[in-house]
Image (cartoon, rainbow, N blue to C red; front, side, top):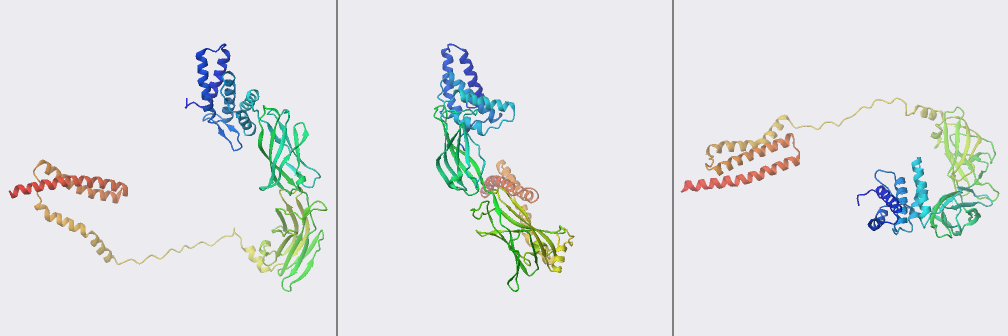
Amino acid sequence: DERMEVLDAAVAYSAAAAAAAALDPVPADTRGTLEVMAELVMDTLAVGEEQEDGSVMFSSSSTSSLLVTSALVRGVYAFDAVQSSDLPNDLGSSVGEWLLQHATPTTVEDAFAVASGLAAIDGAASDRPLALVCETSSVSALAKAADVVVAVSDMWGGAVPGAASYLLSASLQGKQVVANQDMRSLGDGKFGFNILAAKPTPGHYLFSLTASSTSSKYATVENAQCVVRVSLPVKVSPVTFTVKDTQYDEVVMSTKGSKKSHFEAAAFHDVTAEFTVSGDSSSSKPVAVQQAFLVFDSEDGSVEAVVPAVFDGKRYTAAISMMRDGEQFQFHTGRYTVRLFVADAFVENAVMQELGEAKLRFPAGLENKVKHHTVYEHKADIEHQFRKPDSRPPQSFSWMFTLVVLSPIAVLLIGILTAFPNVSIPTSSVGFVSSVAFIACIALGGLVLWLYWVRWNLFEATQAMAVVMLAGTVFGKYALRARQENAKVKEE
């Protein structure tokens, strides 16, 4: 039945398999029923939802996908044991992969569903899925050797005969670094590849792997992916501070890379801090990191200024213009503790060190101005200034305009009152009814206009006016015809 839920179909296949197994031999009419059900197996499996990685799951409107998928795979494999159903060759591997990777049991019932579903696949499927697990999440770029290790096993973590793994590619930010390499066997179903042989730069590498077995009952893992972080320990050179007089363009002071620096700077000075970041080895080259900055903390704790450092390919430079960048310091004069921070997602040893002290001097007027400017201070009340009203015409002109607009209605009323004594209504039944109905339609038209003014919208008024106009046209036609006939009778 097309209306049957997937879970209902799973129960039906399990029940049919149990009933057929209890009957020995199976009666002819029962065998015919089983053959009809076998033809529907492929239709039931066709409703499976394929995921991006090629795995397949089954869902239902009233039950979790985990329970439905497990019940269906148990049902179809049990049914196929008593009545061949030509199950797809990749059913076990695709459903088993979804149960292994995507199903997360949260209850005992869910755990039973996963275990029973995998057991059904392991006991009946000809394409049991392999489990490929990446056991390495991070390696150090300065290590002598660092294997990215993966383990290949069956669904239960057991050994697989003739297991092998192959590295399709390893890429960093979409750029391929290594491709088409055999994974070295490490024993116990584990395989490794020395990523450091490719001299990788620090970063997150995406590995694409395959796994296979010499046994035909296991399906090949065609493309499994894992991410490995290549990290790097770094060292930071001593920071050199240079104070330059902007008026005379000459260097006033330089700390020359001392471990603890003490310098002074005034408003007309520029301060430059230079240092290098490299790998923690004698032969390492300069390294670019995501975060490198200086932090200035005032002695009284009222000011904290952060100055980023810029990498030019060789060294980092943090430049401070005392006048231009003084607002970061709130133009606060006093002693500051200077600290350096260097960090990155790929740096093993983030650096945070105190560099020394700095005495900064700013004009007192600028400091007072900054102190009095705060977003929390009381603001003056806003005085709203509205647009001046447009000049209007005199009241007499407005009355005259109103009379001109309403004059057509007055002309209509005068015409009706003048012609009313000479109006004759036909005495025939058709003419009389048509004439009265025509006059009523005219009155209804006025009523529609009034209702449009006080209640209706444009669409409601248009529909009502269309009905009134249609009725007025029909009644007016018969009323005029009756009047013409009366006129002919009088002439004769």
